[in-house]
Length: 209
Picture (cartoon, rainbow, N blue to C red):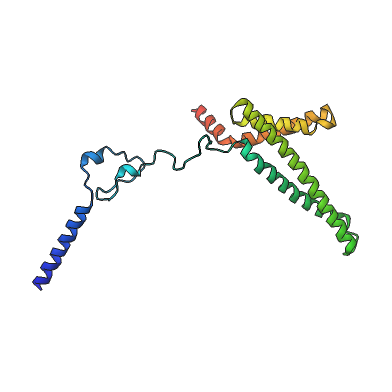
């Protein structure tokens, strides 16, 4: 039994020596120069250099000349498509409500179904065309203003929205164009205010103190 105990002790000591031999040694001087801000203390017995665990740079690679955020031109396609789809869905639901209201005195028959279907398709196409046109004008103005100013901020959003309202309502006359511009200014100004609400709230709280 003493032989078994001695053999198990020798195997444990051999395994410990093997682990110590494969583990790279780091002196206290090497580990003292490694900043551990935001990290838990690392064990000196880890088989990894702690310096490789620090991520001070971005973990993705961008193509040459590419920006970290998408610009107006990249977002234009998404804006136009989403507005067209939203307009079609809203118009279809509006046409369905109108069709049910206009044919409520009729019995369920083929003429009633055809009339409801006509209203659904007509309203869906109308609203999709309207919102798609507005989104197209807004995107074009946004891209042009961004290229002209060389900057991307909320000023581009407000100016593009105002010019979109003016141009879209310009066939109705000067007063209608001014009203359209005010509507565009109100909508884009509200969006810009909502988008920067946290910054405004934070700055106001700091100004109090």
